[in-house]
Structures are given as C-alpha cells and as structure tokens.
Amino acid sequence: MAVGIRSGVFSRWLAPFIALLVVFQLTACGDKEPEQRKAFIDYLQNTVMRSGQNLPSLSEDQKQRFGNYANDYGIILSFSRQMKGAVEGSFVPVVNAIGQVRTPQDYMTQRSALQQAASTLSMMNAQLRDSKTKADTAMAALKQPDDLKAVYGQVYNTVVTQPANVLTPLVPALQSFTQDIVSVGDFLQQQGPQVAFANGGVQFPTQQQATQYNTMMSNLVGKQQTLLQAQKVAQGDFSN
Image (cartoon, rainbow, N blue to C red; front, top):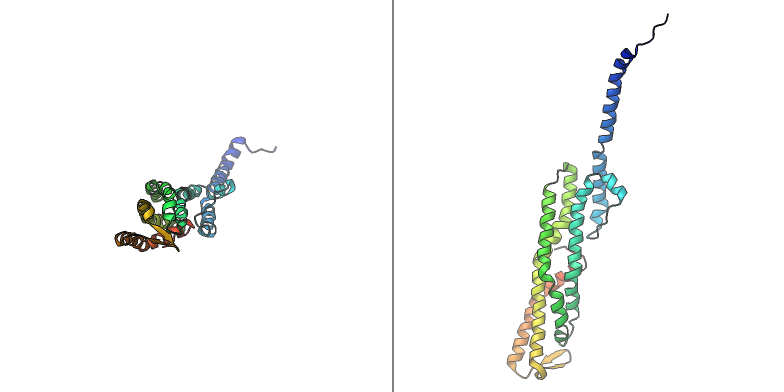
C-alpha cells in the first residue's frame, strides 16, 4: 500500500523554499536605487549640463526612472525657474530700456520708461536671496552616494551658485547705473530751452552747465562694465 506524503510534512518541507522566494522577490523589487542613480547621473551630465538655464521638466517616465532622485532635480529646477522669471520680468526690461538711449535727447525721452523698469529691481535681490536660501537648505539635507554627489554638486554650482553670485552684486549696480541715466535726463530737462542738441552732442550756455553734464557722463562711462555684464546676463550668460 502506497503511503502518500502527509500534508503537514509537505508544508514544513516547502516553507523554507517559499520564504527564500519571498525574500528574493522583495530584494529584487527593492534594489532599483543603483539603476535610478545611474539614470539620473546620465541625465545630469548629458542633458542638464548642456541646457544652460533652460532646464526641461521631467516626464512621467523620467520621474519613474529616477525614483526619489526626481526630487533632487526639483531643487535646481525650482531655483532656475524662479531666477529665470525674475531676470526676464525685472532685469531684461531695464537692459532693454537702457538700450534705447542712443542720443542725448534720449536721456530725457526715456526717463519714464527707465524709472518704471528699474522700480522692479528693488525687489529682485530679495527674491533671489530667498530662492537661494531655500535651494541651499534643501541641498544640504540631501543624502547622496559619492558618485552622484560629485556630479550633482557640479550641476548645482552651474545652475544655482554661480548665477546667484553674479546677480547678487549686479542687480544693485544696474539699479544705480539706471538711476544715473535718469539723473542725466533730469538735468537736461531742467535746463529747458538753454540746452541745444546738434550733431549728436549737447551745447550749454555756461561752462558750469557743461562741466556738470560732462561729470555726469564720465560717471556713466566709469560704470560701463556694469552695463556690459548686465547685457551678458540678459542673454543668459552668467559667466564672470
């Protein structure tokens, strides 16, 4: 008479195998981090580092492939978007308005446009500092493996640190430069019919007026580097 395997014995024999299978499956499912990290590093090196300040948003597929590292990307993307909005909304209009001043008469005709454009610069530095502080705090809290940390740090420097370091002193310098241009327009306006414009120059009835005007223009020439740097930034170039 054949003797079958008792169900209790079968269960005890199979249990260790089932347990091993479950552990293996759990390990396989949870071991996605190296693959996610590799994909994220590749994205930082081959996409982000070549994008300048025009960082792309992540697709749903990319978010899945990067896992939690998608949040790390969100830190630099958020800062870049905020900074780009501030530059385009406050900085570029001032540079464009200054570009309209080509003749001595333009100092008067462009005064209102310059004042209106420059008024937004006063808030730009505060917004920039707030965005930079939030990004730095979030970055400091990251726990990244060394290989990713090295690449991410390079990207962070390019996208966050360097632009902030350029803009922080440049914004008030541009604001001061703009105010100096407005002051020239105010001075010419105050002279009324005493001032004459001819052949791209200005004529005054007294030497005192001419000296004052020349002093103001020399001051602008001395700050020409501010304008050149501002024009680079307006074009998206944050190099020193």
